[in-house]
Image (cartoon, rainbow, N blue to C red; front, side, top):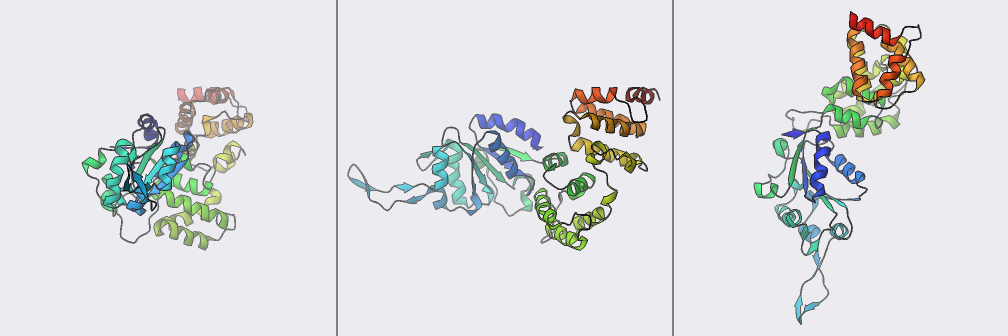
Length: 358
């Protein structure tokens, strides 16, 4: 059974508190590495990251010391541990082992001892070091060139199959990507990532590639008022594939007609919504919800602008807005809007009574 990131982040800390290793399985680009860094940040621990797919036995176990060493007069071999292992043994860290199922069998066999007894080749991990790994295997393994993990290997891990929701990405991306990209994904969620079988050598969008595209596109100015649409398309085609590039270009051409949360709450641009239908208003309310607009107390001007917008809504959508406001668990916003009057003098509370009575 797959879980979203919210579930994973609520359960995994209990496992890590017991110093047990955690294995995250999921499609490429969904944010597995990002969530590991979140775990480290929450604990104020440094990350020691190693790609198991690039490791040799020497990278895992270390190399023999050339200096002569004797025990009870007998010559013996001692080992110089690799730097990452020394760090993980001498101080608490999050030891992040990526692409474990792409590693050689020798390296994976070596990891048995590390995950089973928290030591390897005589070196013991620090008592507070945490082990987290990520792979593309599991139910999605057939789509990737990865090795199968047998039952004995999996038994040494606590396994989470992650399948993050669209809302997981929208919540994470809010403030991290351009409002154009955020609004496009919010309204075209089928382009966030490819979920079915992959055609060989074809470029598809992923959560990771959207962030990489955004970080390239924003400095290029393609989202500016007079941005280069051909450059926008070519960048999107390279990062996201043809289908997403076509849709995004069409979206950007018409983006001047889009209305943002800031347009309504901060600028009071209610006139932009005057010709909207129910679906347009419903999409706007989804923007409010996905951006977690109502989880913090609104300012007085924002409450006033929200009141003006609220009384302009069709009754079906107005109740959806009220539900979203209440579900955000910020009572101050509910009370403030209930007491507010729109600019035309209409009381929000009386308007609510009218809607409910109708």
